[in-house]
Image (cartoon, rainbow, N blue to C red; front, side):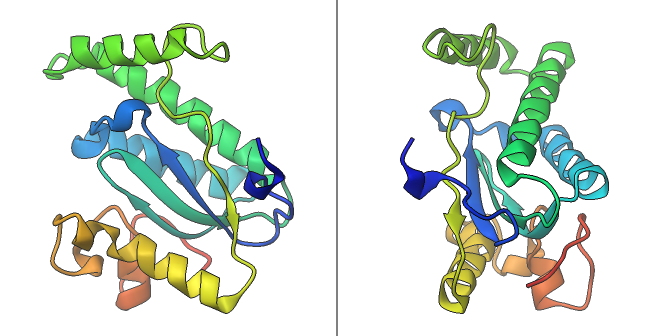
Length: 182
């Protein structure tokens, strides 16, 4: 992996994206989005993650994150590992999941092409962190992240999307996750 896509300074905010293999629309289900929310809340409380902005789209997650204490790459690894295991377990045990066989077969197929996984691969392997070293870059990525649900036709206004930090930035209300606003 190129040094362009490595976290060089964990204290600096980074824009990261986690994408589901095959761009599968897994986050059309509330249960799976809640697993990501719970994982982020856990990492904030227990791993010194500083979450500055976030959005969960149907097949990917955008975050702006940093950490003054821990290595961001380690935190990202833990988030991806935990959420992938929890979501796949939820798919397997969910009697109402109409796509269970297709999903598990898709994740199993992806695992066969990646030596890092044994049974299933949920997330694409890389997350390409982008260091947000200037206010221009920071503002650009923050706007991009919050406008994503609008561009996708999910909502009319960014702050109407439940699984995003836009409500924290555009209103006086608090969203689902405690932020360290930038």
